[in-house]
Length: 261
Image 1 (tube, one colour):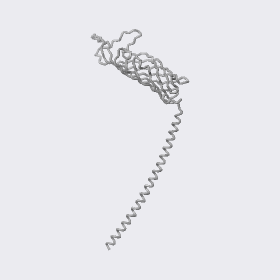
Image 2 (tube, rainbow, N blue to C red):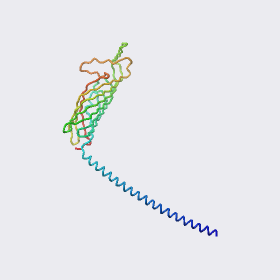
Image 3 (cartoon, rainbow, N blue to C red):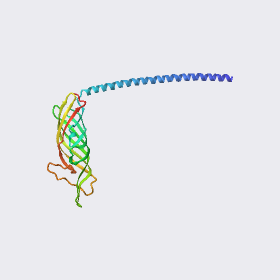
Image 4 (spheres, one colour):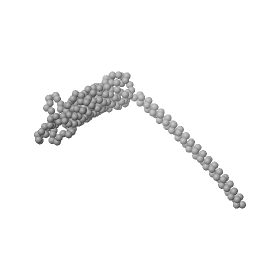
């Protein structure tokens, strides 16, 4: 009788286990069916969203393609390599609207071409910025304030005097650097070189003022720079904290990159 009871109990357990397993399988199947349905719905929504975004991007691109502004320009000054402080570097402009443009130029100064002031091993940089405003109907003539910064270093020799001793150092060799900061009022015009390729000549001129700051290195204590005795038309480029008038003139080749006719 005990064996029969155990056998019946075992049969009941097996039947219960099969029922539980069947219910579990049905539950898992229903869960994965629901999960797959949600995944398909999410994928369909994602496809619709991507389609809407793509259509908006194409629509925006189509609108921008019809606009003439803004556009970028690049260029260079071919005459800068022939200046007394020979330099080379690009200019970049961003034409915001028919009348407004932001323009800047960065140049590397690499040579004292005409041995100005006896400077050797001349190296430096020059930065110019102009917020331009185009005035005429053809949008080729502009006026602008100009902000200019130049920094350079060099090796030279000069005469230094110690008035307290007194003593004079003749042709004393030393290293020096200068910073020139200034501003000007500039006007200019662009002339067509190639209308098909949007290439232009640009001529600028103006008048302004700048200040010169000189930093001499390794000068003995108590000695001061002796200014040159120059003629009226000559200029001493070694006077510290000196204000000067300057006349910015430039000729550049400009290429309008993404301009729409």
